[in-house]
Length: 164
Image 1 (tube, one colour):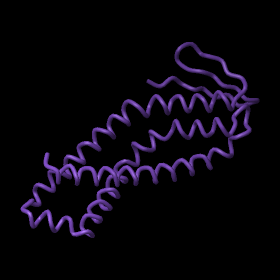
Image 2: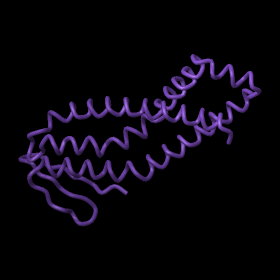
Image 3: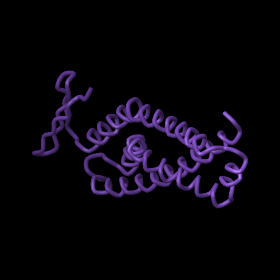
Image 4: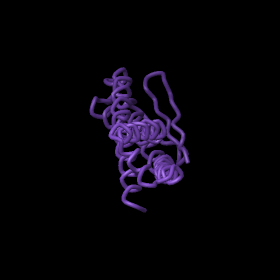
């Protein structure tokens, strides 16, 4: 890959990462605000709510990555166009097809990242976050073999099934 290809790749991935960080910060803030109603129930504290939010972030990242990629690509290409760098690249002989291949490579990298995040990283962390929250909120629980857990809080009984 040429220097210009790596430059465009780095610009789009950088702006995508920036957009993803901003979107994740907003998502974490809204999720933490939503958890405020559960704080104080049982032994569920604000630090456990923050841990729940942090463990839920990979799921949000997998869901928000396409939007962040779109915003990042628009910001990167807009920034390159504003500085007339795209015009100079075109004048030096780089074809539109070559630009499309470079951007397709960025899309492929982000697709692999999204699939690996949503298939291998997010599900176990999301499961652990739910278990942490349920076990902290409810005082009494008993295990129902290897298939799940029954949680009791006063007159409320909840079955937490094991997910595969």
